[in-house]
Image (tube, rainbow, N blue to C red; front, side, top):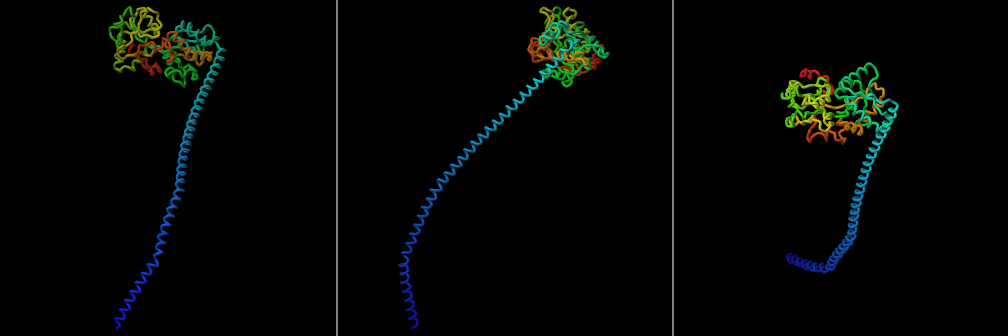
Amino acid sequence: MADKVTLSVAVLAILISAGSLAYSSSALSPISGQIDQARKDLASQITTQTSQVNSKISPLESSVNSVKQEQTAIRSLVDQRIGGLEKSLQDAQTRLAQAEKVAQQSQQELAALKAEQALEEAAKKEKAPLVYGNMDAPAFLGIIWPRFRESYPWAPAEPRYVEGFAPLRARFASEYQAGAPSADLVMQAATAMMGEIVQYAQPFPNMKYLSLYPDAAILPDRQQALIFASSLLPEVIAYNTNLVKDTDAPKGWLELADPKWKGKLVTQNPKVLDYGARVMADLQLVMPRDQWDRWMKGLAANELFGTASSSEAYTKVVAGEFPIGILKLNDLITQRPGTPVKTAWPTQEPIGITAAGSNAIAISKKAANPNFAKLLVQWLFSPQGQRAIAESGRPPALATLDHQVSLAKVLPPGMKVFAINSEFLKNPKSWEPIIKSYFG
């Protein structure tokens, strides 16, 4: 009985439960629709708002991009302008430096002009300087001094000039040591000047044209500037064309030691320690020592005849006393047409000529007319003075001077000038035992 009742109750519960479920679904259906609609509305609102936001963001992004582009353009323009300003600044600094350089040069030129004017005014109060020179008197009196007076018309018509060589140098040294009146200027071979006169010379380091010349022309150096080489007088091999055929002329320096020339060679006596010895000293630098020794012995065996000067040696070749000579090039440059003397340019090693000859000038420490002496020296080293020296037939020391006797125009193409043996120039006395060992 109890089981039936329990079963009835269970069935009843199931029926109630089923009816309740049906009722709930019916009651919730409207709510579910509302939820779906709400979801749709929300999605629509989100889409709308997103679109609105995007529509607002897009112009903003465009504006931002535009601003960035403008910033880039501004930066580029600023960089260009800054770069232009920097270049303009650099150009301005360059122009300023150039202007300062020009101003400095102008000041230096003005100072030099004032110094030159002061020197000239001081010279006007003095006598013409007494010159002891080795230049032939006609050249000094007829060319050098007239050209000097073209620049300084107030100078006296006649110079005071004494021509001479070693005896004149000895006279100057003796007068200087005794305190007797003597030369204001000494013009001699550079070797003799360095060996005998340099101790009596006064410095002239502010000579106006000093910068135009190489170190070799200012002795013993630029700081002291005691002696100035005014002309270059290279030594060459020459022959008398009446006595020697062109085809038989010496082909070079070494050939002078050939026994066939025994008793036929002349040059300035090397014992004088001047041009003749300088040729030998210069050639020592271009020959192997054993070859140079054999060459010197060959010259001695050939009884090389020595004269008091290179000009005298030239005269002897012209006269036919000797067919071969080691002579100054300027003597051949200035000789009259038809003179039977020619240069035998070396064609066998060592090929070149020696710069043994150079004329130099110095101002005495005890010069009675020091300002006039300085003015004359300064003029001699001006382009005008160097041209006057060239007119006298001496190759000028000023390398840039354009003249027919300038070495660049006189020497054959490719003919070089050997370097100077500076040790000989500084101390020629040291060569005395060397020369004596060969020539007695």
